[in-house]
Image 1 (cartoon, rainbow, N blue to C red):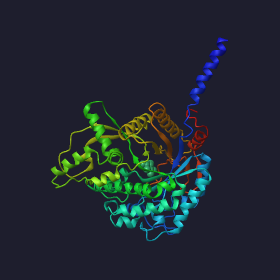
Image 2 (cartoon, rainbow, N blue to C red):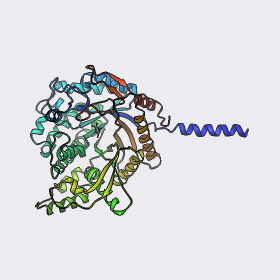
Image 3 (cartoon, protein in one colour):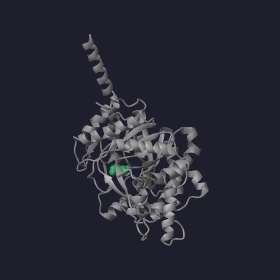
Image 4 (cartoon, helix red, strand yellow):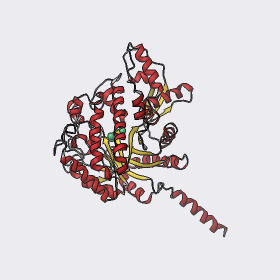
Length: 469
Ligand code: BGC
């Protein structure tokens, strides 16, 4: 009898461990971006974008064909269905529907492409989650100054209104802009992304000023003109890698906080709290004065702008991959103006991704910004070109386990999770790094798709929702 009882108890314990489950309403999806997968760069009236010219100028691999999803979108929908995704996050190429970026000419074939994709997803019971801007600015708007021209706010307004008008009835979640930090730091600071400008002292901030106004305008347009009709939700996709202090010394903790404020805070503070983080206002203001400027290199927001941007969120959309270690360092002597000197922390990449760090980050975001919900819009792991990607499965499991801890133990309302990426794609300059659940053969004119082990694992997860399998 006692033996029997013990066996039942052990079985019960084992099954409760094995059935560590994601909540039924927790959405599981996968993501992509137009320039990284579509190809068809000059077909059916698409206008050029900054990634076409940047890759050409730098002699890099490009997205002219990419995974050819412009022609193979039905395969992508089929795979999304087979994977059992609750949602598919993709982006609209601005210059595919407005070739110059301006509203005076609408490219019907581009419009139809997304209508077909959205309707096919809906027919399969997959929610389309749409990113409106994913780094592929129409080239014509770059000629007008890109993110350094605040008129971009108006061009973006016209474009997003058109998208809401065209697709709003099918879409519950809109993402305005993907990773403003990357857009501004890499595009206008380090020069490592299109348009490749190196204006680390001020371009980064002017870009951020414009991005935040663009996001807010899009949110307000939806709120005022479409929310009653379509009842969707809108958010800004913020990438925020956790910063782990090297020690618990007060200096390292100060460096950690400063590093977070100069990255996630730079975009989350205006949207969730109001205005730039104070530490940015103070430090950039001080250094600018010492450098001989008459005003801060960080463009101030007017009171009206602060109020307009503040509150433009229905959820916190988070892209998250890894974390950095940070360490205090003394301020650099005054020399040339630079974001890096303004921030002034020693930082290095920790290459081993850690779900526990993500849990810490989720707690930090909840505490600082108190969002109604958090949607993880990207999380993934890079491998070589392999089908047996056990490492990816291990890492994603670790992330998901920690997200579940955050939901169950820390009471954080994480509503969904999106793997980056549905398929292998153009990794901004080359095809070497692979992130897909599904392999794409880039040497094959047909861009054949083959499922990786992680694809089968994710398929099992979406159907059983059991994590510890
Ligand atoms: C970007 C993706 C990119 C991924 C992997 C993310 O930060 O949003 O476009 O493919 O990183 O590098």
